[in-house]
Every structure is written in structure tokens, then in C-alpha cells.
Image (cartoon, rainbow, N blue to C red):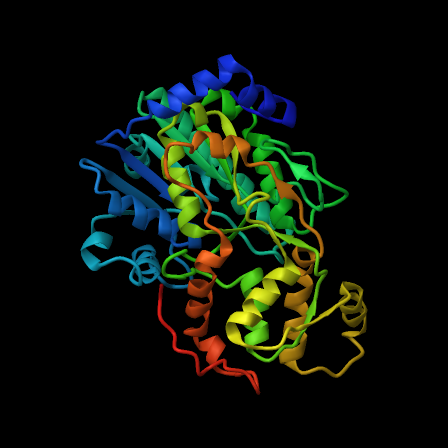
Length: 415
């Protein structure tokens, strides 16, 4: 079953036969053992947290295979170790089966022996993606669309051999471009334009997956803006909202944005915990689900800035009309700007759309499916100190303290 609009969701949630069936199946979900997992994107932000959480569950008989590609002279195993060493001990990392492959290539570029090994997988988790906001459409499609097609081929092989139990595909809640209305799960109607080629390629990937939702036990997960771990604050990258924080901590007191822009933030551990819970719920199979905070946790950009500055005991940044940045960009070739200033403006331009307007997300279906799981998006005030403390410990945060503030003098401790 797939839900592609508000009417179908309301029908599922409100009509007594469906609601009863949904509740019954959710309550009856049971964790199975002796699984073979095949995971792509394990070196990424969500991917490494997913692997950590999966290992911490300690399910007997689990085998975990990871498709990792070598990059710039670094072997696949070394890349994996560098990504996981900060959060896992060596024994845990050595328990993982690393398969040197590339999702952009047919059969991931594997030989027949390795391909046959991963075709024994019962659970597929596709996290590999080109998430760059500045990628060309060819670069974005090469990983995001072609990688999805190769994963579909693997899913078909696993199913035909009688092995496939579930396939998770991680997309993005921002797959609908520049829309600003309430987005229902499965809705793929884009606005007037996509804000970058990442969004476009993810939209194209979901269009490709539409028939797969009825052919396979597939769940498409759409996270919103993913931030660090709610307890440790640990983050795997510093993009989007982190870029704004980093710029501020480095002395950039101007923020080109709209103060009323809604920000839907979710900690990475919520995303992973929700995925792991929903994988074991048959009613989630064949669905597209938002992993977002929804109305209860979404805040405005201005409110977010107030919370950050209150914690840092620092002045608010000067929030300026986004149109001024566009004027600056047009003048770039004529102005004698430093390399640092040019880099800031280039980065600001790529993130600007997310600071000017955003949609909101219907999460009722996700909440219903997670009703008995104790998995829920925490309120921002519960974890923002941990997020900021982690940022303050990073080298980029210590290089340019803001004059006249307490930054750099605050006692920092992980929550």
C-alpha cells in the first residue's frame, strides 16, 4: 500500500477498518534474527549512525555487509574505519563485512562472487547519495538515480532467491522543490522549480521507485533537516543549518534569510531509531514516510537564532533581506573580494533557499506507525545545548571567537 495524498492518509488514519488493521499490525511487529543486512552509504552522516545503532542492538545471527568505495587513493576499508572509529571500537568495526564497490556502476562494480554474496541479503538499506547542493544534474543523477536503479536490481535478485524481507530507501523531505504548503507522504509534485540538482535527482529517484512500492517490501524514508545526535550532539557533517552556525561563530554577523522561514529539524538518532522500528512493521512496507518533526517541533529561523544566541550569550546576527545577497552575487566578478569572502558568498548562495522558504510536512502516518515504539522527535530545547556544545568543541568554532561574548569561555560538556 502506498499513500500519495492527504485524502488517502486521512482514510487510513480515520476509517475504523484501516485504523484497526494498522494498530493491530503495529502492535504485532516482532524483531527477527539471523538477518543479512546490505547497507550503502555507511560512511555518511546517517549511515554511520545506522550501523552503530544496528550493532548496539546485538541481534544474534546478524551479518552486516557494507558497500564502500575507495576514494582518492584511500581504500574502502580505510574510509570506513575513518568514518566509524569516532563512534565504534575496533572489534565492532572488524565485525563488519566490507565490500569494495560503487553504487554508480552495474552490479555496484562487483565480481560474480561478491554479487552472489550480497544477493543473499534479507534487508537492504540504501543511504548512499550525492548530497551536494552545488552538484551538476549529471553528477547528482549518477549517484542518486543510477544508484537507486542498481539497488532495485539487487532487490529483485534478493527477492527472486527468496531472501528479501525489507528494502529501505532514504530520500529527503525536500523532494518537492520550492513548495511552501503542507506536504503529504508520497506527494511528488514539485513547485515552480527545484532549489538544486540534489532535490531534482531525489525526486526523479522517487518517481522511479513508484512501481517498486507495490512490487517489493519497500519503505521510502524522507528525513527533514538532520542535525546531530540528541544526547551527544555528534554530527557527521556541518551543512545547511550548521553552516549558518559556523559562519556566526567565525565572526560573520550578517545572515541573509527570512526570519519567518520554518525549520523542521530532527536529530540523527531519531531518524535511525524510527527507521529501525518501521522496518519491522509490515504496515510500513510499500509506504513513503516523513521522518520529520512536523508542526509540534518546527520553529522559525528567527526563533532558532534567538535560542542559539541566548545559549551563547551573544548578540543576534543581522538578518538581512535575501535579495541583497543576490545583488552581491551579481557584483562578484567586479568586486575585489578576498577568497574567504567569495567562499562565504558562494556557500551562502547554495544554502539561501532553505533560509527563505520551506514546506511543512504531514507526519501523522509516521506517528501512527510508531505509536507503541517510544520513538518520537524530541523538542529542540531538549537537545540544542548538546548540538551547540559539540559545535563549540570543533576547530572551526575556536578560530574566530566573537568579541564581547562568552563564546570560548563556556564550560563545554556533552549531554
